[in-house]
Amino acid sequence: MDVSAAIARAAATGAPVLDLSGQGLTRVPASIGTLAELDVLNLSGNALTTVPDEIGRLRGLSVLYLYDNHLAELPAGIGGLGQLEQLDLSGNQLAVLPSGIGELAALRALEVRGNRLRELPDRIGDLRRLEFLDAGSNQLASLPARIGDLASLRELALDGNRLTTLPPELGRLTGLTHLRLGDNGLLALPSELRGLTNLVELTGLHDEPLMSASFLAGNDGYWFAGAQQILTAYFTGGGFS
Image: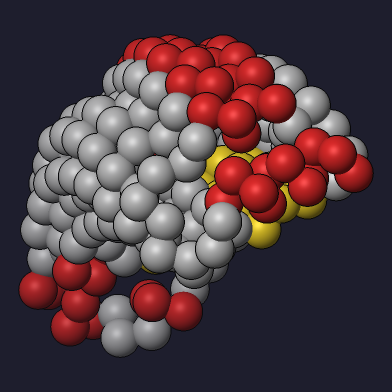
């Protein structure tokens, strides 16, 4: 595909959507930044190792798909996407997220599953409209305390990391309804999780160290129990013992 020609056509017609997915692209020309009318940009399923800083000029962009590439870093300019509501970075090689991610004030869904992230930036706490965060299958050993500032968060996936503890600030996410924690190394849950009174799904604890053999033996049906029953069993019993 002639990407430059596709971008030129989109610019000439004021197209709101540009789908360049699955084209084997190894680079995106800087002219991508000229598409002032663009609402949705799909660059997924290519062979991109980076994207140009000019992508930050797409001020009206609301959806950006970059999943299933080979991205090792993101440009600082991505913080310019002030209207972005959905960002999918899954299946790349990202070790860090730029602090500019905190500038994405309109962001509602952030997917970073299947990267190499060792930490989440403190500024992730600035994403006050974020409702969905999938950070599963990374290398996270800890979470920033500011994760508790995500006041709008409803779904949080942290499975498949290296977490042994969770920050007590998670208990401030009172709107959380779904929490995935499996395939880590959790040794305990902070008592502040009692505050998650809207939680309806809590998955993955069956394979964590905090789940003792005696609890599993006597509670074969716990996996299907409601999240509140699971938390109550944990905290009233002094752990799953």
